[in-house]
Image (tube, rainbow, N blue to C red):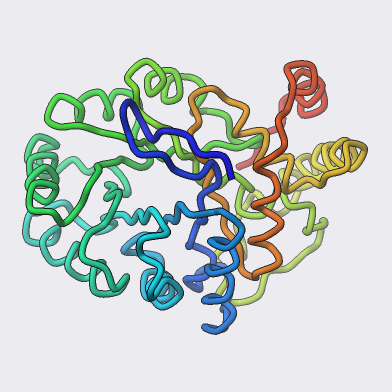
Length: 301
């Protein structure tokens, strides 16, 4: 699989990143053996960049079990999801290292901005973790351009993880341009819009208990109906090009010049292998214009 540098002078990472959120249980239970096989299938298919987080249920330990004996084959990212106090950061990184079964994290990210403690203190502690060999690179997630700019004043940032997909394009307004100008690699999350861009769900679908999409406004009522009608047209366009909507959603994000790697989740080995095959689809400028014409004002709550 093709690789791109993660930020200016950063490490090379696969252009598709395995997102471990779905195997953690919040989108429905996944048997442990299946979760482990899914991670291994992703790596075997060339998806050697993996992203998880402190708050993703059991995902860190599942990734750790799947990668025993394969540490050298992958670039591992996780996130600090709890508070940013030095006390919590110290315990959180050790907990993540234990769960993943590793000595250091390749990319350690702040899962979301916090007003306290000041970002100067938070970045200072991250730099100390790097200097101590616990982490190699620093990233942010769900940060605005202004919040990222402020954090950059106090330490290096190699990556930003905004929500970005064909449904939610707000990151194009300021986050993606700022990252491009600042040499920060963009690794968008929710590339499949929590499943809206898979083509698997039709109006009236009910998610089971335990799936956090149950009751989510974007999957119900007029909002979903409007999205569904356009995604059906996008699905047909993808099929005319010998692909499907999932691979189109992945290839579309990868076409943006600021994007380094697209984070895509999977719950089965088949899904992981299918996602990986999107890496070789290069959308042309003319095709991107056709897609924009189809999607129009597509948006979802």
